[in-house]
Every structure is written in structure tokens, then in C-alpha cells.
Image (tube, rainbow, N blue to C red; front, side, top):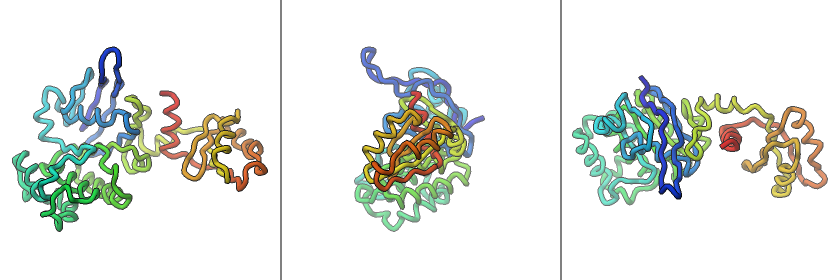
Length: 306
């Protein structure tokens, strides 16, 4: 039995005259012990999906189970079995680190001592600040405290909604190392993120846009679905270069990508032809080279069909 099963979930907001579809017939499974990523920009439907799975929101239609329990009929059982870390820091700002942790342990009728081994690797990093009010912590420390509180009752499934948004690069790296440690302990983890580079850290990912699933695969499998040649192009004047690329009939798509523009070519012949069609005379310091697609390229390509 999958740890999480989602079947034809639909969720809308608003009135009949002005309705917004947050989730549009979503279906997929997450296996036990899997680190599964929900990847998509703001407004894609990630938070709505997590709130439905953690029994905080009702879907308009469809069904979902967590650890075999129905999210509507068995909501009380699910709340005792899952950990949820919402996108916004939602702990008590006026309570200390230790007081917040004790509070959540008490809610779930357990204690810090009973489940300390599960949170130890995370909590030792903030334990020196256990008497500091939560509102006075840095972003990375708040993140670690929130994760500790989500784990204090030893959940079987952990839902993390954009946990690395707004924290520095070092804290992001540390956080994903913590997730790998939790996965090794057998906890099923669903994590949502708008950062495409974090997709490669998951076992499988679902690419979500405007409430629709674009692709579900391993990170390498998603990249493997990108079949067209991809060229990286840059010059001293990037904006005119982008316009020129977008007007070429041998280019199916062109968009800014870091210090380069990425140009998706129609075929291999078009990739070779590009070097002849872009003039180094009118494009100072021109560089044209073949490059490999990544998750972000795949996402941009799939979005064209939504």
C-alpha cells in the first residue's frame, strides 16, 4: 500500500462567476520511505494539495489516503500520524525554543525525551538557544525548530510546504542533508518547493503548474523526456540577442537562463544552422554552444502545453 494515494482530486476557490481551479484532477501515489518533491511556482496548487492531505482543507471531489487512512473519514487518525511544516513560520513567537517543543509534544501526548533520538541531529543545532524566544531566531534556526516540532510525535509521513523559502544557501543545503537523514530512518517525506535545483535531491518529483500535473518521474527521467537539441547563447547585448533568437524559424523557444539564453532547436540540423544564422559582427562577444537540459528547461517546455 502506498504511503500517500491521491485520486482525481479537484479543488476550486471563488464563486461560480469567478472560479479559480487550484487543483485540476490530480492523481499520483507516493511510496513508503520515498522523498517525493512537488515542484512548481507560486500559485501552482502545492499548498492546497498539502492542506487536503493533512486534513486541513476539503477537496471538491476525489479521494486521498495517507498511510491507508481516508483524509475525510479518518482525519483524526491522520493528524496523529503525520508531521506538517507549513510554508510560513507558524510557531509561537513569544515562546522559547524549548517551550515550543514541549508544547507540541504535550499536544500529541508524548515528551521530548521519548522521541529525542528522532530529532537529536536537528535539535542539537538549536539547543544552545533553547531559552531564546522563537521570534528572535534567524531564518535557518526557525526552520530547524519548525522541523523539530513537526517530528516530535514520531510521524510516519512528513509534509513540508516550501521549507527552504527565504533561507540562505547554507541553511538550504543543511536542511536537505537533514531530510536525507530522516529518509534513512524510514519516514516518508513530501516536500514542495519553487526551486528547480532542489528537484534533483528527490527520489521522484511531480511538476505542478496551474493545478495540473505536467510530469511525474525521477529527476533524471524528467530530463530524459527533453528530446530537442538545446543551445546556450550569450553576447554583450543580451536583450537584442534574445529577440533575434525568438524570431528565428529554426528555434522553437528561447528564454533567459542565467548568464546565457537557452534556445530550443527544431532538430539537429537547426542546431548546426544556428551558428551561421547569428552573426558575431552584430553580436559582440558572441558565444554559442551545445548544452544539456535540466529540470527547469523541462518545466518551461512542459508549461507550453498547459
